[in-house]
Length: 485
Ligand code: DUC
Ligand code: ZN
Ligand code: ZN
Ligand code: ZN
Image (cartoon, rainbow, N blue to C red; front, side):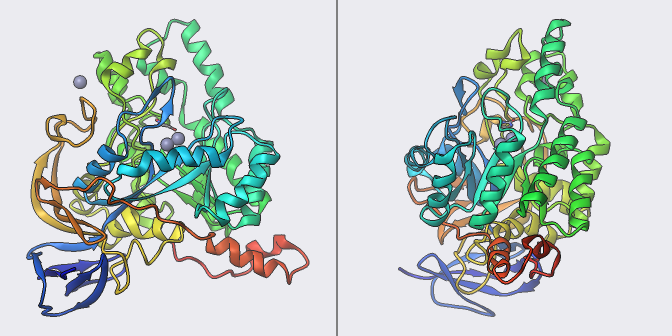
């Protein structure tokens, strides 16, 4: 295979900014230095050359609320690459009572046409001896080191505190990291019934039923359960100050707790639900719902100061027709919004271009931090010799207006419709394959590979230390080398 050389660009990583060329061979970075020659040249003049984005939170072709999310692994990863994201992590969802390994087989089958690399988090949607046993196989043989828990969606995906404590403890034993969707599902279910009984049936009632306090409470509870279990914790879609505050406090106390704002929550606010157009509001129904300006400012501050680590999308796109399942009953509107194609350009435009984030922070929160948390750094999330050539050549001068008319996603609208972005990929490379060249998208279905992940280092190191300690509880507080995230 001939080499590819990225020339004349400025490399930007989570900690360095410098001018150099990059040589790529067989999908890997093989040389970084000045004036490289001998290969197909990609001109990066005027561009920043960064690790491709990693979106740690997507739902492609997900069975949910009586339907399937509309983007599959082919369209979803195409959207990802178009926006500079070169790896996605989806959630494998066993049905309550179903084998984790059977569910994983189904997810493997769905992903065969992925255009970029991917991995899975395994969801724990029920508890029993079978789950306890299969978690070990999932970690030790299937390359999955993260387990998701839904504290909401009562009667469907939700698990209770005893189940979470058992699962988090098992994660700690196996060197895996628990993830949580933190909303108090019992209270949400009560609020939903009350709102419906009072005649509040429209999409705006979705937001009333899930206020920041239910998220803050659940986040606190998950943190305490993780602490009791001796596990780290990753809180998905952190949308409000109450949840952020709980995460900050836990980190200050020495816990490895990570928070993940979504690009949607950073940019869009609760005013969207007041739109009198039912379709407009319903298209924006997701959980947690959009919040007000104060919460948005809190999330931006968390990204800048390091108390929140990763920006994701929770990409879970439904068409307008699917959203209309909830006409007359907001509880039936499929929850979810898209964002895979727009995450990086929007975060650049609203973050870097405004001075809220440095370029290095941008790389950290879109790629490097999650690569470290998921234990795939520096294969992913880095520009280093030996890293996968998952690279975005970012042109800060390119502009576009986001629109459903020219998006890769399979749905018929875009929640960011009309937003202008400045800063877009000139090239996106997936393991060396040029998949995007400005507006030309040339992806290869099936090019994407499953990325196996070894046990989470902070937990597995703690496990080996435990053997020498009387009380495992001591370990959490005694200087295990930090992952630097
Ligand atoms: N929230 C959503 O909006 N969609 C998918 C699942 C979730 O938690
Ligand atoms: Zn969720
Ligand atoms: Zn509208
Ligand atoms: Zn989700």
